[in-house]
Length: 602
Image 1 (cartoon, rainbow, N blue to C red):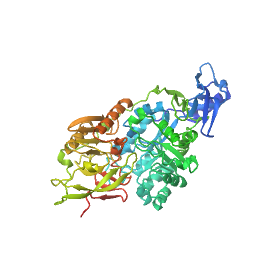
Image 2: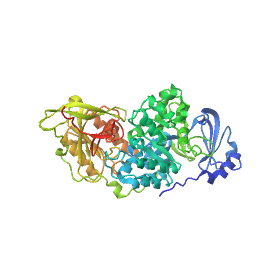
Image 3: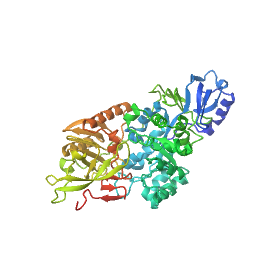
Image 4: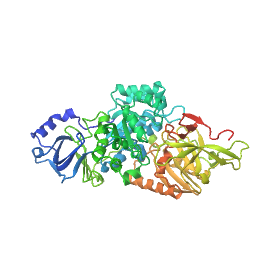
């Protein structure tokens, strides 16, 4: 188990006191900046910050007494000095990157702390996968705290995962040095119904004095929501409207508003603060899921803060939601999240609080990025070979594996169809009438319907679940396949051509996982993700370039959705309404039941 070498406050307190008192010189002094104090929500002009042992020692109007012959002096020249940004809820795997490459991608954007839930890899490699993510995270020059995944599978009885997480696994992980709490409790029906396993995981976390992450994806704010709140989750990020934000805050949860690559939930919820005037201490900003293209081209938490400000939030409040509010929520207010004595010296220099250009990033007292360029090393873990060989298919597939056979004698069917909703995680449960041709049901371009299939890839069962999806706008003969298929991470194949669907699935078997698009029998784009079929350990800019090419290929096939790849990858997430696909069949997430593809008698 990897531990972090960064010294704790008790180890360095005597030196911090001596530096602040002027008895010893600081390691670094940042002079003449505007100190953004998130404790008091004020900007203090012409202040100095002294750093020693990777922590803030003195924050005040004049740090001249802290400067010795070997002290590094950084002239702020009137720039704003703001705390390093914190992402309160995220999945590193969604960036298609390992923790090292994710850190390298986001640190130049000002993110110095992340609270990550590696439940994606937990579904593929179990507790070992969580440990590998944890260990690489502990090597990084920024703070990456790990939440122990709570739900693998996310909905027992409705999907089959590569591994299962147990209460014993949770209890064991609570003793690991970088574990900050329990990852999002997605099995909200289990909590509501008093499932002993779910409550045991929550109890193990609370006994360890750590934070329980929430995930309540239902729009029902009645008794089920109250029962879930009583079950112990301390936060939630699944809200999509103002009422959701208010309800969670009133129940004592920290409500997390997310802006990911495809989730645009800040604008519809920030009004709880900007218009309703609720206490902003109950609200936090996060990303949840960002792919590599977003990270490289648009930013990370700086993007979220800018967006919140554009939606009418006071810049200082938005910064609080991305710094001190997050730290306080996880019990780390004395450790990070602000520029104040004793805290980790995580700080950004920026010339504007609204647009947040990131000039200099300091993490643990060291300049790790400047003008968008990373200066610090981000060490890699030696990932074992079996973590790179996880696409376990029994055989190559053929077009026949993707045939949807109609009920005998039918000339049309009424089908249950997954409806994609742009920029949101929820889907719609649709019903459409489709023709039967030669005993088969295929997609219908006129109604924007194509096929979706889930290919089992953990136990080599050879299983293929076939269904239908609407909303991507695909035209012509094409297919897109991905081994990123939250959360069970089998393989999702979507297409208008069964031949291309087979080609796409077999290609991912060949390369060991990733995302691929075929059109008219030719490969248009491939993103290799060899680690667990989820991540690449290549540099972020290389993965981002391939992800951009993937987006171009999707558009070439007729898809105009914003970040449609993220929509594709979530269609097997059987804990977010309304309808999903799993290896066991079509799932109605409103009732948590398996339903038939075709309605009888219709």
